[in-house]
Amino acid sequence: MSELNCATLQSTVETAARVLSVRPAQLRDRLLDDSDDIRSENLPESLSSVVWFHATRIPKDTNFVDGLLPTPAMRPRIMECLQALALELGLCTETQWPRLVSRMWSPQLAWKESLPTADDGPHGFLVREVILHPGDLPIYPYMRAPEYVSNLCSAIPHIGDELHEAYRQRSTPAIVQFRSSEHMRGTVGCALVYATAKLRGQPLNQECNMGFSGRGITIPFRDVLSVEWLGDVTA
Image (cartoon, rainbow, N blue to C red; front, side, top):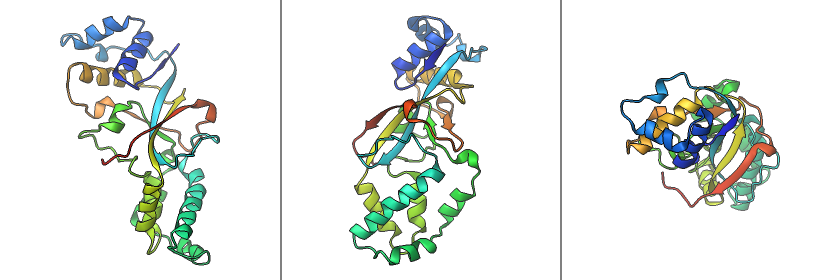
């Protein structure tokens, strides 16, 4: 049993080779051979776990001591953060804030809250690279601001845009690396599609990545492997 980790091309090849019981050099040669499509084979799913990559933008003191939380559990914390920012910046008073919250609505937030529990996250990408270099892949720019933060700010009357920008200024792009033994079907094949594209110098496509959703269940702290703090992003 082994763990699949697509943090880099090298880690993808090495961990996929371990799963397939071949040497990394052999796997590279097969992926570079146009006549040998290993991806079409009946690939073993003998995995103990998969490493996933959660793209976000968070305050630098975030420690995930409570684990990586799903959207419903994050709402009170985000609202508390936005309230503190609003009061600090003088955008409203302490008595005005509850009135603003009671009037919250936007199409974006209504859409988000209409989604099924399966969309509650926590979410992750199988391939780290698509977070940083999505190219033409239709990926939301989570590191500009978490999607749910944007949804909530869009719904706060009068001061939402200023709060959104204030959150951006007080937070840092990050990639949270975590492991899970759930939702592993298809990950090996996807990893090989990614590795093939990279080895052949081809652009990444939608088959080069797949997503993870915790379906509303927290990723425990013990499975949060690291937080990679990044420079600001413009994407």
